[in-house]
Length: 142
Image 1 (cartoon, rainbow, N blue to C red):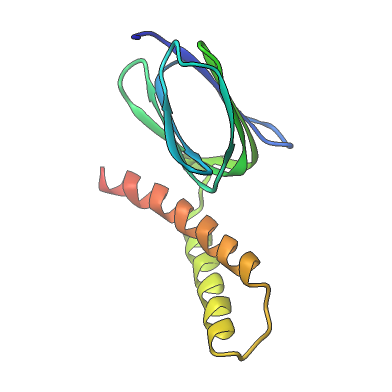
Image 2 (image 1 turned 45 degrees about the vertical axis):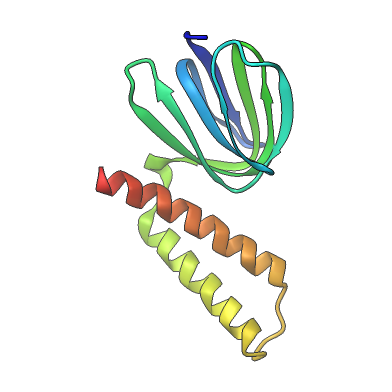
């Protein structure tokens, strides 16, 4: 069904995105990516860390980093309640690269048994850094 759908991405600190004219939304669901168009059947799902993409009414693709949370899809609106979220413009490339290096080192230390660490926390840090870098690199390639 063709038409516009509203998108709102909210974190505990702020409203990250609030648009009324998205054509399509693709989000990182816990069980895999899902897409929503106007008229979609309502549902609620948990989210994993990754990239949320949406098309504007002008056909331009926008990307937002999402760190977990929940999504509610209604026929005319998608609401994302994220633990954290950043637009492409807010992602600092240098900071994301440094975070990835720190996470890689912690994972290497875990593998070589040089340090006792929380493996799940180290993996999550790596996934967040990797997701941010993918968003930035994708924009640089365009």
